[in-house]
Length: 350
Image 1 (cartoon, rainbow, N blue to C red):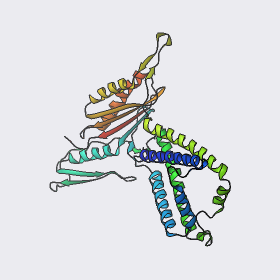
Image 2: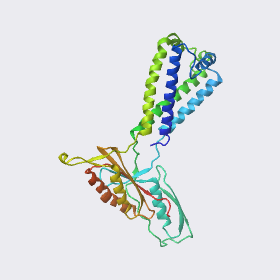
Image 3: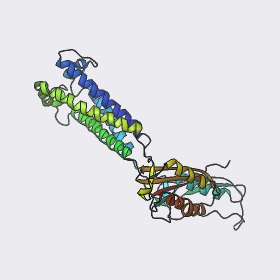
Image 4: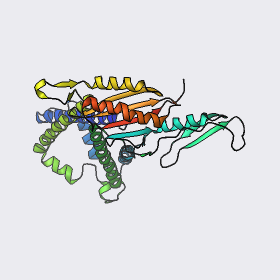
């Protein structure tokens, strides 16, 4: 998921709630023939009646909206950084991959294991082969003895990482919001510089048919606007609730078996704890993280294994698939259990 999506979505949802509540309060106050309660909108109204479209302040604010909308769209539409290089898996339900950092760590360990090389800098770039730069103690003639670098896992290719449903919703909402902000800024700028009509750019901001129509039909337009704002506020509050409490972790998993003998439920923590304990005992494993995500009726296992720099990654990969993942599928009674396996390499030796 994009790191900024949830904070931006929370700010947008909170702003919608606050703006909707203010509109509702002011509409109710105006209906009771009271002055502004929360926001002194009459001052803004008088300003808009006396400010022309070609005013410098309109152009400045239009430019700000254009920049803000373009920035939001650029952040949301930019292709996500590829962090996983897919590996050939022995089970069709297993999505195995080597992280970019893991590939860099493997190549770095291979380079520094060669006699005469004291350090190596590895960069993995999109669409290019990994490049490594090493530093030797001294020049050696061709054929000098050294250690053969360990083979990197085969079958690596780019794969797009999956997003949670909530993250897709956030991204869609931010794209729509960014598009509206950009269009509003562009429309204001084009109107201000006289693209649509030089005469219209000399008019005041509220000197248009829309404002005239609202002024003539305010008796029903503003109550209708308040009702719409109420719906927007409820939707935004629900959005905030989802942002605060949503999780992709599964609940207790019901194990298959005869119903006349009762129902057996397995807490995900029990499975992930046992799985992590088994994998940590494997040679070359530095640390393990595992979790069960998705619906309890159709769970998915996510296993992240960090190996030591000198680990034999192909052998570790084969053992993980043939032993650990097989044991997990047997424990759940689901031979087609979807598994995401991520292999990483520790950055520095202790």
